[in-house]
Length: 431
Ligand SMILES: *Cc1c(COP(=O)(O)O)cnc(C)c1O
Image 1 (tube, rainbow, N blue to C red):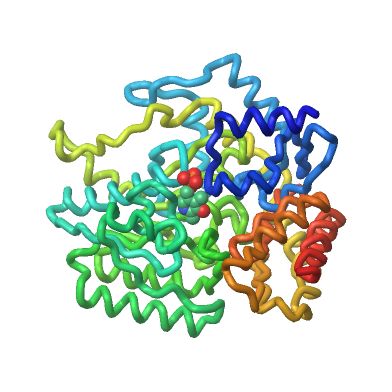
Image 2: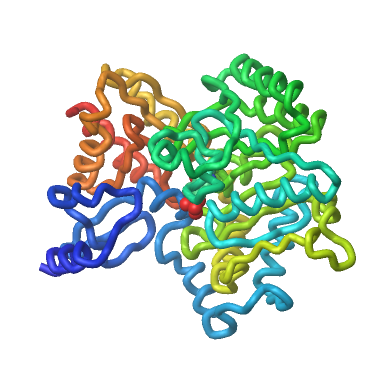
């Protein structure tokens, strides 16, 4: 009853993200009453395993008692304060911790409130840093098949047609260099070679290359070898081009290390974080950069040299409290080590998908697994079929086209991993 009522009220007044709203004439919208751990629960008592961490943000389950406690404490102390001219303990503490935890050479934190706007910050800062050194370099490079968010600047460096094509005439000109075609070291070297050729010709126009380290998330969970990052780092340093690591999705343990760049042992010039930063609680993002880049903006007042970018909710205290609580859990509960065992269990469970005829490939990097289906046309919308099957059987899967993937909260148990994968297996088998 309540479900029906809420659906109707919703459709009267809401426009949902990334949705053809007409689909909801047939496809039921699901009002969620409450959530705990990895489970979402609707008003009829149906429970769903959140196999995609609610769009890749949740780390330690919904209504996590520890994060709840820390956010509640903060709520009675300070909810928000302007971050220009003012500061607060949560944001200082969080910044100190991030500087310590991230790869060497990242010493300053600049906050924003979502992944796309943090990407915009990194792009503007990179261009502006070169400009402050007397170089005008208006071009950005990104990888083919990349995704960096939906705002105009972020979309301009993206390369997923589905999101980009319509808005093409509005976007700034960027260059795409090939992403390694598979997870081999050879492909990594081949792709890096292409980037190097580009640099030989146009380095003096290029401010930065922005990449999603190791996994292109919205780009159909395409994965590549860490060696590519090692080579990119060398080329960027050689040609005076910034390396922007967009770890909005892969950050905070998804790849098996706290940050994906660690797998390659490299430090980017800019590190972009969001999604998992607050454990999936509140919107927050941050760009970390070096003291060197910071120093290029540091001078006696000159209106063209300072970085005058701002967002109203920059460094929100509640969000920072959630982020600090999230880092506490990483520290206290030895999460990265425990995830290694869970990832190994997922590897083992994934094997059975390989024998299905309609499966082209199975791939995994750390806590992210993807099953690529083959033999279907786009208009068959098989992803939607898997989604509907999942819901009927208590698992929230949200395939990207023909890619069924798993990116669960880290508190998932082996039994729950098995249930989640069994449901996906049956869904694929019945297609
Ligand atoms: C989700 C995502 C973004 C955009 O973040 P929003 O908070 O959705 O704006 C940017 N980059 C990557 C790699 C992402 O996965």
